[in-house]
Image 1 (cartoon, one colour):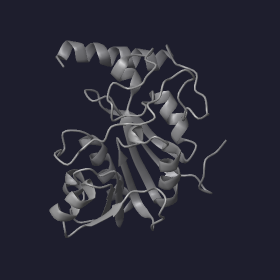
Image 2 (tube, rainbow, N blue to C red; image 1 turned 30 degrees about the horizontal axis):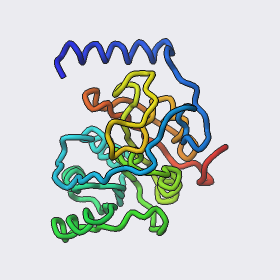
Image 3 (cartoon, rainbow, N blue to C red; image 1 turned 120 degrees about the horizontal axis):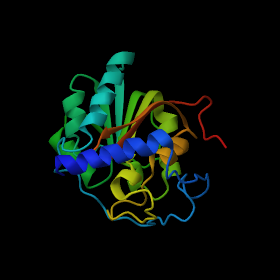
Image 4 (cartoon, one colour; image 1 turned 60 degrees about the vertical axis):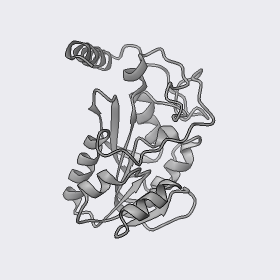
Length: 229
């Protein structure tokens, strides 16, 4: 993206959020917080992340590493860790568990046999972690409520979660489904904040990468854990 196009997008984004223009109504239904009329993709294509390093979501992991240092985290979980490269890079001396599915899980166990890897089925309860990372995973999940419930159970300290901002990717009037066939749906910032707030108290919500349109939330689990009406 050339610098003038990027500047226009930044100005448009900032103007819209400052003055509240083009904000869509948000509903708490089976739409998972996304406005009525949005078209979801019920079955998504598999995305193989094993060749990736830190081309994407690097800023998310930097924020997670800073949060880990702030609270003195002893254990870090990475849900949907992909290649595992960023987890290894930003948490070399911390106890970590990376969660993913086959065939990625076999790749991780072969590539980093000294570290812990587990299946991410969202049903088998594990212990809790001080920092839980979920970077650009939620948009791939057909029923993200299952993921959010799982995250609320395993997060002891802070959750760091990211997903693309639909407004930045397509503009305010996009009604889905996403062009990326590995994505089931994509949220605007307003929608994603309200959706995540069902399970977590939000401490920080911002765009971390304007080129990738990445929005990130840092939050703490609600007590008692579970969605609010």
